[in-house]
Image (cartoon, rainbow, N blue to C red):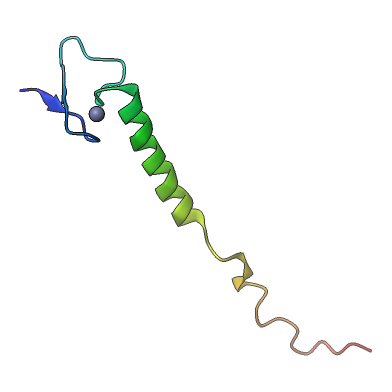
Length: 62
Ligand SMILES: [Zn+2]
């Protein structure tokens, strides 16, 4: 039962397995990695200003 590339759906040979396994080609592997990195970047992108808001109460400048 041939495995299919998760990116493009093309059949990937099992014997011998390509270096890009489980992808049909290094290109498809890069596409998947790019998606993964983009997702990771989106998650880590938090608003850094949330902690500075609300400060200054009780501080009276002379
Ligand atoms: Zn592919």
